[in-house]
Length: 295
Image 1: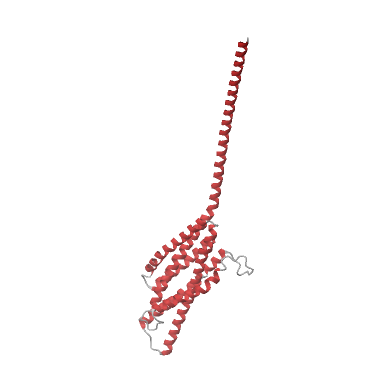
Image 2: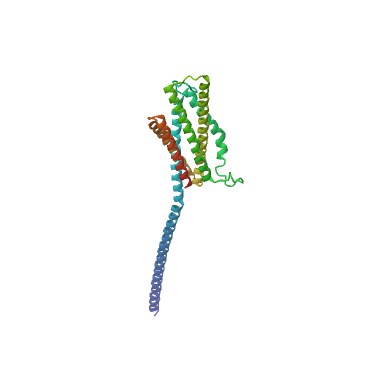
């Protein structure tokens, strides 16, 4: 009887043990299934968040990229036209200072150095005073209260009348020199010669002042782009700021090489042809710059 009782107890124990193992196996299977389902849910939520994040980044970076492209194109027009203009003024002033002219203001070296000195003095005196209004929308004065775009539009369009009058004066002086070299002075006396000398001097001073003011506005544009616009577009992103500065420097170096080369091709013909072509290139570039900056 005892032996039967022990066998029954052992069988019951084995049944309980097998039942416990089955229940534990089922719980482990349910736990694994739950874990797999949670993993799938987590992966799907992460993929959805990544898609939303990528869409947001694309939405944010698109205006920034467009602004960067427009500023770079505008800067290219500014640099290439400025180098063509500066190279051309050296050629024109050298023509005015030829030794075969009956009435001359001096050597070409004197004319070029005087022109450059006038421009640099005006830049030194006026550019710091102009660029402090680059973003002065909070000013109490209505006339001085304008945003970055209005400031850039004014300093770009302000160069056009200066360059137009300077081009007309250059053409007048070059045409007078060509007439003098072909016909000579007619001998009407010292008074006529003095009047001619005064007219030439007044024309040269006007050229220096007008071109100097145009150079002031051009320098103000460059300072605004390199010190304000690029920083504002970077939005406290140091890597993007460095990339933008490198890109502007590359554009500057390309224009240093290409600008004088284009000017040489334009000056291969007559002075009148070069005057028309250079002035048109400069004015059209300014109009395009203004349109791009407004975008």
